[in-house]
Amino acid sequence: MYSVRQIIKENWKSYLKTHSPTAHQKEEIQKMIDCSKNSCNSRICSSCGKRYADDWANNLVNAYARFHARHVVLTTPSF
Image (cartoon, rainbow, N blue to C red; front, side, top):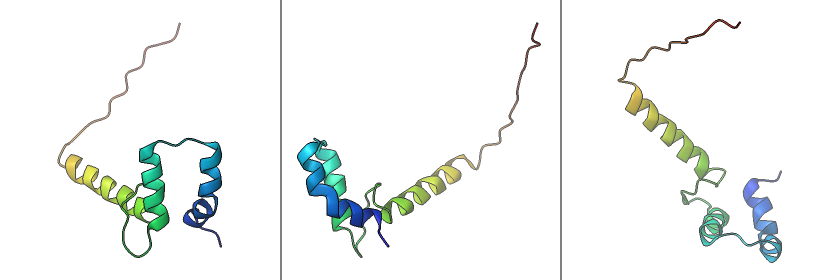
């Protein structure tokens, strides 16, 4: 079974021949390709990115959980 990391690793060099990613994009891809048991902390890495997204969501919940809010919808009649 293929993984995102494996597909990118196999095709990255040919992609670079026809495209011009930014230095930041190259750095993130390289971190993902080199990631194995050590965490690369790249948001685009299929394993580390999930962890990053989960942490981000938990931080949002913790930051906004103490606020009480009400949702109000106002409508106007159509003529």
